[in-house]
Length: 316
Length: 272
Image (tube, rainbow over all chains, first blue to last red; front, top):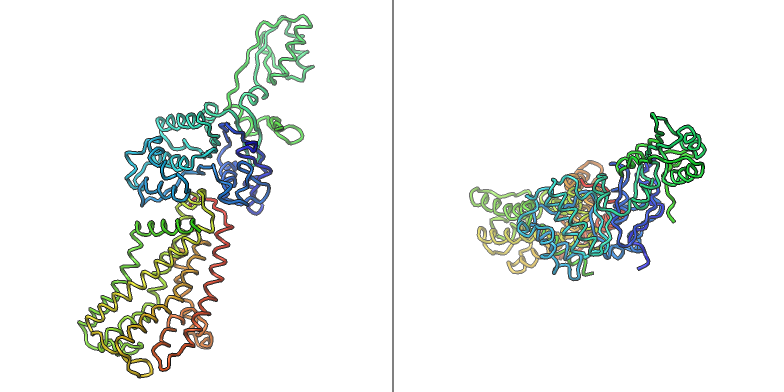
């Protein structure tokens, strides 16, 4: 079980001069609910298609539990299920018949699970209707049912809540939590920050085909430059010392306002105390994942002088 | 390969569930009925076609006339309708990703689809032959027929030769199936693959009638639809039948190999 559910190394897909995926490195650990974040067109879906063996990479590789779908085909997909973009079915067959076909293609005891997965996604009542008459939300749920037939250890879902109504989104979140609690590792692509913040423990943020950040949401929030407001007993000395720490401050009345990482703020507070300057208040303007995401993906202060995004964290 | 068999069974089930499947089969059944009804209502016979002058003499002549008639576009079309559609429509509808992320290899999917498309073409041909034989026998009787060397052929022997003719007719049809599979793997649009398959057959017929290109005729796929006539000569002329076997293989195998490799290597990169 030492092989990670997903390991991408330099995964790339070039169409002529265009790099849809420019070299993605990511690692999903067993038990993760991994949020794969990026704006539309960043390369999420293309890289997920490569992970599932639907697209051949032009560089690097994607391994599922240590196996390469490009080399091992269906054997690499053992224990893996999911869908990219919207799940698609045969509209002229019923929901149940569609699942029967997928179960036949999966082999094993998949067929015996049809009733159970239909119950789980609450489609039992409509299973006898042709998929052509299903709403978007029902097809999405049938997609999940189809994936669960495989009794997966890794579930890959591409924007599963897109196009769902609020109740559908809530149900989908409940379902993802439930599956995660059952021990399934989940890869969830999304551009809904709130959803990822709510469901995921780790994230990978992709932009223009590259990973800008990978790690836990906690680390991301703590490491990133966040806004602070600081009031001390000696504002002039505080500004000087902040400057010594490389923190740019602006003065706002009696307060210093600045952006800095948690570590930098901790170091500054120690120096202030040693110098006999008392901290009256230190307030953090809490950054949400959404703010971070836009800062990262829209380049606002993201690029450092060497051209690399500041927030890239080397993954050990 | 059990995977291939599973795909084959489900491809048939999918065909059964689609209305368009019945279009080709209905055409295969209706054409002989229309022909026989017209024969009953009109006098005269299609004398410029082989066996055309015997359609009132023996019901056995009717499936043979229809074999020649159907080779122009009916059977290329019926065959293309399924073979050209069977992969391309899945690309277009996005269901290819659905089946290719299950426990199947792409080769199994391709093989299952190939067998299903072949089964459909075979069923359509058997339908046309069976209906033509029954309707023809009702109209013109189960009588001896005259062979192409002017020799009399007894009704029972004639029936055997009709069966053999339909079997030989399957060779060019199999080649059309392979061309259809190739175009279906290449195109992401079902109509393009179906029409492309039909067009390639019509193009070969065009080449066959162009002045100066007559020498190519024996090597055109469409010419092989007439090879069965060798059975009705005395002695049996095996030469066109043997030639049909290798000429059809020359069309079918490269198309099949390229189609197969294309399907194995292609990116399933967008839904429609």
